[in-house]
Image 1 (spheres, rainbow, N blue to C red):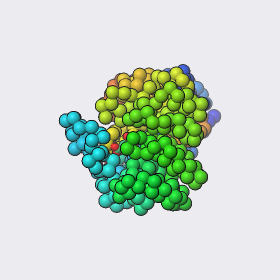
Image 2 (image 1 turned 120 degrees about the vertical axis):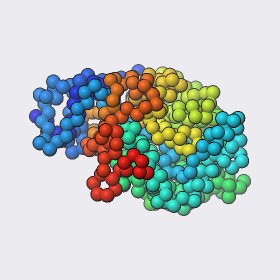
Image 3 (image 1 turned 90 degrees about the vertical axis):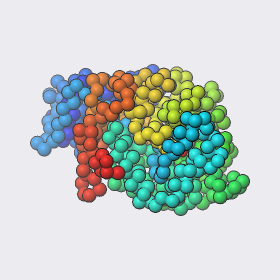
Image 4 (image 1 turned 90 degrees about the horizontal axis):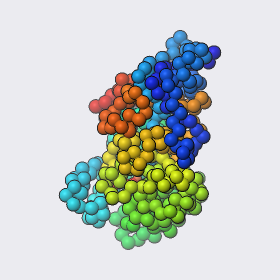
Length: 437
Ligand code: NIG
Ligand code: FE
C-alpha cells in the first residue's frame, strides 16, 4: 500500500498536465484528464495519481490524514504566475478614466504619470507598507488558486528603494504560503533625477545595483523593459551581461508596444523568458524557438490597454515556442491578481484552447521560472500544490468567467484555503482572512 497523509478523491476531472516540461506544440493541449480522479500526498509530495478504483486498491490514508471529497469538482495544479510587479504602492484608477476619455498610455507617461506615478508612491512607502500591501495581493492570488508567483522590483529605481522592494518580497516569501520568485527590474525606466544621462543610469544599474542585489541574494532573475521610452537593446544587453556575471537568470519585457528586437536579444542571451511579445516578428519567433526561451504572454495587459494587437499565441505554439501565461499584476497595465481573469482572455483574445491556457498557466509557467521539476503538474514526486474548483470540467475555467470558483487550495500538501477562505497558519503569521489586508 502507498501511505498518504492527504487525499483528494473522486474529482469529476483531475487535470494532471503531464510533463515533460515545457509543453510544446500539440502537447500543450494534452491536459491529462482523469475522470473520477484521486490524488494522494505524503509529507508535501504527491505519492499517487489515478482513478477511484486504483486509489481504493493502492492507497492507505494515515489515521489523522485529511481526505477531501472533490465530487462534481475539478482538481488541477495550483497556478504559477511567472510575471508580476507585486511590491508596489498606490493605484492609478485616475489614469484608467483618463484613458477612457482619450488619453494614451504614452501621453500619461510623458507628463510624469504612468510608471513614474507608481515610483513616487513606492518610494514613499516603507517596507512594512509594501509587505502589508503585498500580503493582501498574495491572499487574493491564493484564494484564486495561485500557489507560486514571480515578483519584480522596478518601482524604486534607486538602490535603497529597489532593495526595499526586494526585501519586502523576501519577507512575503517567508510569511506567506505562496512561494515567491524575486526578480530585479531596476531597468524599468530611467528615473527623472538622471535627466538625459541614460548611460549614467545604465551604469548605476549594472555596476552598483546588480552587485548589491546579488551580494544580498535578493533576486533570482534580472529583467529589463526593452521599449521606446524605456531601454534600448544595447542598454539592456549591458545590464543583462552584468546580471549574468553575478549569477542571475534573465528575463525581458520585449516587443510590448513596438517591435524592437527584444525577443532576439532574449534568445541570444539564453534568457529564461521573453514577456509580452505583442509585436514580435517572425525572426523573433524563430530565435525564441531555437533558444528554447519561454514566451510569457500577458493578455490582461493588452486587454486593459485596449491594444489593437495581441501576442501571436497560435503562431508561437505552432512554431514550437514554449508558451506560458501570467497576470502582469501591476497598477498601470493590468491591475488584477487573478490568473482566473487571464484564462478567458487567453482563449478569447489569443485563440488558445482552455486546456492550452491551463497548461500555460501551470507547468509551462513553472518552467519559465526554472521550477518545473517540482511544481506545475500533478505527477508523483512533485510538490502537492493544487486547487479544487467548483466546476464540472476544466473547460469551465475559461468559459464561466468573472467568478471565483476555487474552493480549496493545497500548498506543499497542506490545506491553505478551505471553503474559499484562507486558513490560519502555524504561529501568528497566518494568512489573513478575506477583508483583513
Ligand atoms: O509589464 N511594460 C512595462 N511594465 C509594466 C507596466 C508597468 C506600469 O504601467 O506601471 C508592464 O506592462
Ligand atoms: Fe510587466
